[in-house]
Amino acid sequence: MLFRSPQEALASSPEVASAFQGAPRSAVRATRDRKAVIVAAAYPIWSDNEVVGAVVAEETTNSILSVRSRALERLLLATLAAFVLAAAALATIATRISVRIRRLRDEAEGAIDDQGRIARGISVSKDADEIGDLSRSFASLLQRLGEHNAYLEKMASRLSHELRTPVAVVRSSLENLKLGGTPEEMQVYLERAEEGLARLSTILTRMSEAARLEQSLDTTARERFELAEVLGGCVAGYRLAFAGRTFELDLPSEPVPVEGSPDLIAQLLDKLVDNANDFGSPGTPIRIRLEVSQAGGLEAASRRLPTEAASRRLPTEAVLSVANLGAPLPEGMRELLFASMVSVRKGPGPSAPHLGLGLHIARLITQFHRGTIRAENLAEGGVRIVVTMPRSEEHTSELQSH
Image (tube, rainbow, N blue to C red):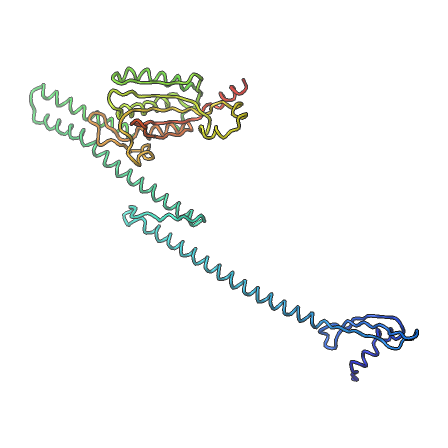
């Protein structure tokens, strides 16, 4: 094979031949190794209207390929570095998540001992991620389980206190009857035994009252009724039943219809008034008040525009409160007061047993009427129980139409 020098190849190239003929020309051809491209351009040199020579310029793409290779190399190095940093970051995050999950697992396993009792709580995480939410859920769950265990222990203690006195009365009366005596003495022993049995029966009845109420709520029919009329009738009866106590009743001038059961509302008020009578100071009144308010309270109403507030002055909630003057609630009892078997009384009652079920039943009735119940201390001393329930929507629609 015959190889030509670059000068020979250039002189015989088409663009040079074209330039010698007086026509400029450019061309693109590959190098011998086929790895680059040569761009060539030839232009004629004129002298006295004759072509005496040609100017030839050539440039290869080697420099461009070199720049591209360096760019690809830098891109590859940057990509590898990014992958390494991402892998390190993912490994760090995965390690931290794994450590937190193992710590949460260890705390959950060690929170309950072999006897099923809660030994310790779970540290609450302040992180806003899913593991933080899970730790807070576990902590809340353990807290509720602890409250339930405390409730069970308190129930056993309270029942033992309440049952001890009537059982002792019945036992002593039966023992005295065995010893004999005059008919008058035996009659006294029989009366005492009957009183003890009646107290035991009352305790059992009150224990099953809440369970029976929960079962009956599922089948109780709802009806629209005027809440103020039910309260007025109940308070009239309280003034006769509690002759030594003054009742102050404050009712609104407008009707307050609600949906539910008037009998259950009367039972709810019985529990609240009985509680207020037990804890109210002697000679102080029991204040029963019914009012209406905007849904969401005064704060939500104040945020509305004036034109909207003027056109929407229809209250949508009924607020019932029963207040008594006396000792305030102990700290930490406001949330627990409505749980079952929870009472702030120091011990069993001298005449009637108190199992801490009254306010629990009141909460069940309130929930049946889609309402809420809370307890708060009064500034002047005493306690107020506040029940909030929605008014009848049908009644609200009628008022809006008028």
